[in-house]
Image (cartoon, rainbow, N blue to C red; front, side):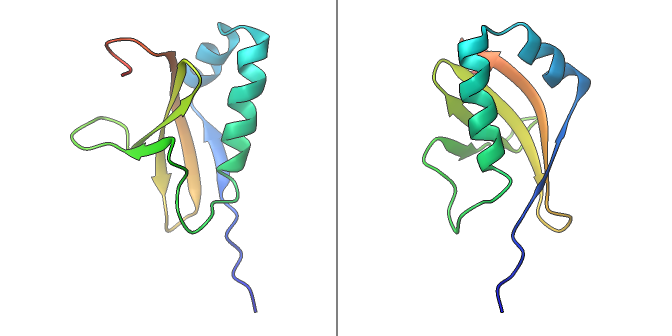
Length: 91
């Protein structure tokens, strides 16, 4: 019997607003990567990093953009918090 490993994706209003400011080609790439978070493998992709001493739990690299998100493993929820272009603040 296989375990249902599907996660629900939720978004903050800020993350939705951030996405609207990004060029459409980049938005497509970002949405594809976020959709992949619904069905996590045994290990996260190398482009996903657990953050220490940061307001968000994880960071995912998608080209020059970073998707910041929190993960509730018990409830199986990935909460997209912020999307930003890579710079000194989004590293």
